[in-house]
Length: 479
Image 1 (cartoon, one colour):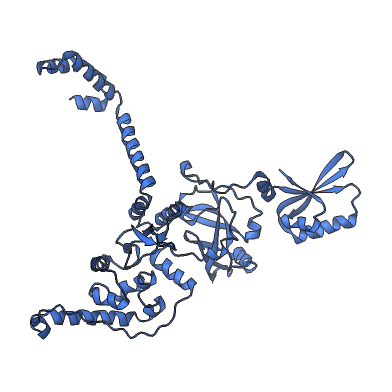
Image 2: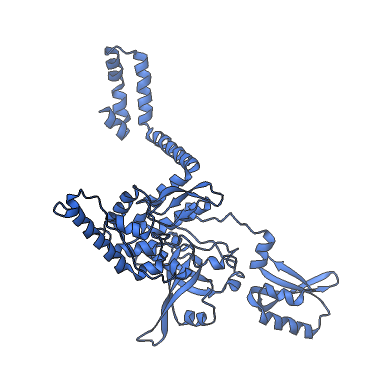
């Protein structure tokens, strides 16, 4: 009765039962005053004390979480990655955070990986042991639980020393060609004596050798065989006859890694452009598209990996799609005739900036492309912050804040200061230079006449490089 009254916050029932509670406590030998004081505390809790205990519990969890992340950051982040391992966008987001903590993430390998993300120690260049997070074999697409379990159990007897050693120890009734291929592509069998290219070209031979080994071991251990009568314990020795085909190029290896893991771990195709893409602010990551508010403007930086062109049956006009890669994954954009024509003028072998709008289609956030910019043109644009559905998730990049004057020079109007006796021929030179250095900044002329100044707006849009043609003149950034 009392518990129900507390739950419903029924003050009348609580008041009616105070005397019964105190009297009952006295009958059981307790002090009446203490019983009355205890009842007052119960009434106070009924007035709404749940939020206080709830807050205290969450405060404890917050403290414990902060403690673990501070003093056991490798183990904590490995556990976080494992908890989200079935959502590749979340894995990419956490790996981004892991790298910000200066923790290295290692790709999967049969000699270091567990089923899930784990922590292992590796020797650094100084020969010292250093903790790193290792991708779990369970994150490799298409391998399956049984082969992984068998690989890890057998490894407990010692690391795999070579591909032949791996074949001789693993059960090939569980490890098929279908599950072996993603292991090879992901790099899980690297440094066992053969390149990925060589192993991929000989998958059938490897599996045949594994099955032959299994059959031979079964015969050797059978009770009716000569070897069985000798007590068994003899293992079939695996010998591979494979020609070394060299290795795939770095681009192909990264593509294989992305295909099997859904994310780049050992490197990224954009790494070669690291210096060129520095300095951009407020760019949206591909993994954050779903978190953006519908109608929000978004700028994404990426490299076009593939363009698929088609012709409309009714309109006869070209259209297509582009697969684009950023540092966090891939996204797709619809291209119409205008965008396809724009691509013809751009170098698609380099990163580009895509100005988009977030739209909703079938309750899913989609990107609608408005403009494609090369890096030079994009630097002339003041990129606004994207709006997120949850204001608490508003992204803030505080690692590199440019000085005020740098912000001004990249986003506001530009003015050239001239004397009032400027010649028409010189004005013509300014116009020619402005047409050569077209950009996003309105060009103004400031004419000085004794103690007065006149500001004149032109219809020209320029970029920063126009200053190089007139270095002897004064230039001003206008707010």
